[in-house]
Image (cartoon, rainbow, N blue to C red; front, side, top):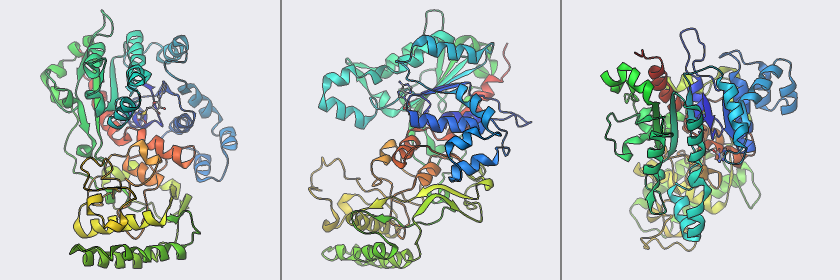
Amino acid sequence: MIDLFAGPGGLCEGFSSIEDEKGNRRFGVKVSIEKDPVAHRTLLLRALFRKFPRGKVPDCYYQYVRGDINREDFLEHPEIKDAAREAATEAKCAELGLTPHETIDAWIRQAIGTQTNWVLIGGPPCQAYSLAGRSRLRGIDPEAFESDKRHFLYTEYLRIIQQFAPSVFVMENVKGMLNSKHGGMPIFQRILADLKEPRPDLRYQIRSLVVDGDALDPKDYIIKAENYGIPQCRHRVILFGIRSDIAEATTALACSPREFLLRKKFPQVSVNQALAGLPPLRSRLSKEPDSHREWLSALEKAPLSLKTWLLPLKSKIEAVMETAIGNAALNVSVGQRFLPMADAPGADMPRDLRSWVLDSRLGGVLQHETRSHMRSDLHRYLFSACFVVSEKYAPNLRNFPPSLLPDHVNIDDESVPFIDRFRVQVGENPASTVVAHIKKDGHYYIHPDPAQCRSLTVREAARLQTFPDNYFFEGNRTEQYGQIGNAVPPLLARKIAKVIYKFLTSPRE
Ligand SMILES: C[S@@+](CC[C@H](N)C(=O)[O-])C[C@H]1O[C@@H](n2cnc3c(N)ncnc32)[C@H](O)[C@@H]1O
């Protein structure tokens, strides 16, 4: 497997997890390419982790992620050294489009060797296609929008297909790609046409993993993660390309094409199920002295903001707030890089998720540490989370008491784009999409428990994205959030990989 635009490695984590009956990995990452040096460090660390059979990762990995030894000592550790060298051959920090093609091609050629059955995975970056990014850029500078090179990063992906003709490929992207235009032409149609015939002598069938058939509508390529056991409503375009000669030789593809779709049998997984067992934490106060006492006293002032609110809802929310503030008195910890715990944190998760996420060797929870919030935001968070407890749905700014509205917001203005500016994740439902914006502020990712009154931690965001608890994100906290928001949920990637594996191992004529 070759992974382009690999980010922190969500997609390749899922693929790498496919094992045969003897526990051997069936997809080996041979090269993964990522330009961001910090995401690349995460990718490298995980590549190293995967060099060991499951359960056999040396203790020094756990010492490193817990913060007991530094990175240099870890990488020099005798039990790790060789694996670190191999991981560095696999995970490359390079910018596609900038790094010379000869260099990239030499890596891939050497990695593939004589293999003929291999997979290209990855998603060219999405900012230029994403709805928010598009309107912002188009508005600010239409010319820059038209010439934005990110429109064309997929051509780097295409170039690798042209050059190396993988048996199959899996390409992920945001939904915005379906509607984006360039020079008046729909980008998606052009990408599809290019992928169907990358060279005059090379053709691919471009299939959906959720809808069977030849005459597909663009939206048929959208995978809704929440339908496949992922605790998050994440809708992404995923293209499954099969080289025509292989597609034609695989009889099962014509006889029972539905075998090569994702199975939709999974019950929805809720936020509460995904976050099960993570220790409750309080947030911290920013722009003023912080302590548990001061934080609690800030919460105690929140009901004052309901004073002039005249809705009948007022007394219900006040009662919920009172209980929440009482419970908040117990939430003393703000968390840390590693929180030791006696039991593996997540016994209440669905089995599928539990076995995927938990690792008893960790002895606790990584990267579960809260952010600081301004007092005014604490009041908004507390109100919003209490509203959900009372009303069972997340409020938007129209449901807010006037005194909690941010400055300069006119909620009667239909065009207000930030009506959902404060978004509680409803505990009983899958989360809303975790996107890289989570690194900027946590307003869209408010924890469902009002007694914690805070945005999600890195580990909680990682749980909603189904990263295993032993997955460590390098960089500062902002960078960690960004990597998580960018990734394909590894458990979804695993489900996709199962389909691809089934296809690659189906008999051919
Ligand atoms: C959407 S993320 C990919 C997530 C990844 N598939 C996963 O599952 O974790 C896109 C990544 O492409 C990287 N990237 C953007 N432009 C790049 C380029 N020209 N060459 C290599 N990587 C690039 C970004 O830094 C980002 O991490």
